[in-house]
Image 1 (cartoon, rainbow, N blue to C red):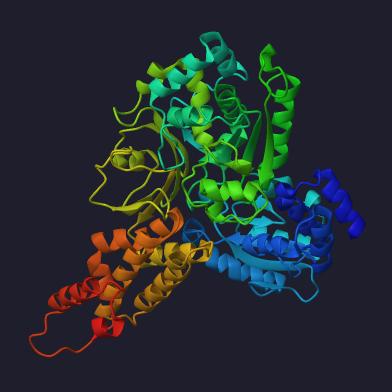
Image 2 (cartoon, rainbow, N blue to C red):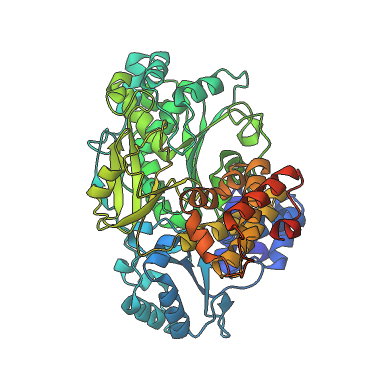
Length: 592
């Protein structure tokens, strides 16, 4: 073990910043992170064992106790639930003779749940030793069980088990006719670098990860920093349930994404770039490495790119199962080999990012768009969309529809048009932007996609009238409680309390006071959490309470009231009591 770890550390340049990659290799070798390995690794990297343990305990793909030689993780996303995941999970557990969350007695196989795997359009889905398997059904489970019992190496499993489809159903300005490798860089140098930055500014391109910050402004801020060492980071950690468009872009349009990163490097003066790839997308890793090598061989990465004084290269870093790392400062912490805990801001990454150097962090789709704007110009981009939301948006559509997959629309499109295109009928509501986004009811389908109305990072989950509003909220609320990084009390404790309070109501044991307490918890978590996870964790409750108050009231336990008792008046009184108390209301008084 000591020799293995020493060789491993040397292959990673003895860099503590590469701790996640080293731990991934140790996990693959021993099916957990052994105690002795931590001691050897601490010595080799000259860091403390406590630092390593903090990282191991933070990421869900690392384990301090042994897992099975075949580690199976089944996606627990709501879209998988909608496709019968629960029954399939029970069937799989019975076939493998292993309890969910446990390792079989012979150590051969372990089975557990994991958060969304980014295969929402082709679920139920899961991971076997990190490799994605889509479209799980009983025949496929039977075959997998037999392969495991025979101890067949994963490399010898049927290739169709690991096929992941793009499912692109509608291509717009970005997906139609991708640019050739090198075209964006050639256009930028022919036009002039500063003129190209002005074109991106003219395009009014805004970040496609959800926040919508103006891309040219971010790049300009970074370029104006006095520190000469700068970095470019592509955020491919799309952990929001229902989102999978970045997976498709990296599978089919990777050259254009890498071109956008290189363009950014030329404009801001960066020499090092990183693609932070979510751990669930391990199946893309080797393919992306081949594409990067192709770009090096053709003079599009490395030194003197296109004969210009541009030196830039890109390294892929894999995550290890942490939704919070989609937040840019948490992602940077993870890149540095640390737990992905969001930083205090300011300073922002453009002035103090990776290794405290100026860093641009943008989404996969943003870099894809920037490279095409460099070729076609800013006016081309603003010819699509609306005045405040220029260009198009790529959507990951899943749930209750005939044709789940990828759709690209000009901003300003009405929700009802999207629903018609993907074959959604009898729609109860749509979760726009994932659990952290906005739930809209069937009375709101005339609303439009755009920053001035419904902004989204790309997730679009459709629910028909067979679905339960409280069931949807229950799944999302437990997701946030599970994914909280634990850094701040309002989120760490608040999301857990939200989940428990919702459990009580969904279970039919809640009273009117419990709904008031739920609302108060939402306010505390939303207003006092450290980062975006906690600030949006209450959205599923808030949005459905606004739209479906009767659903919550119908779920409350039946209480015999005195004649003349008015429940609505009692609720209003309880809310007034709650809001008078700055500490959050004495729940016993509210309930009384």
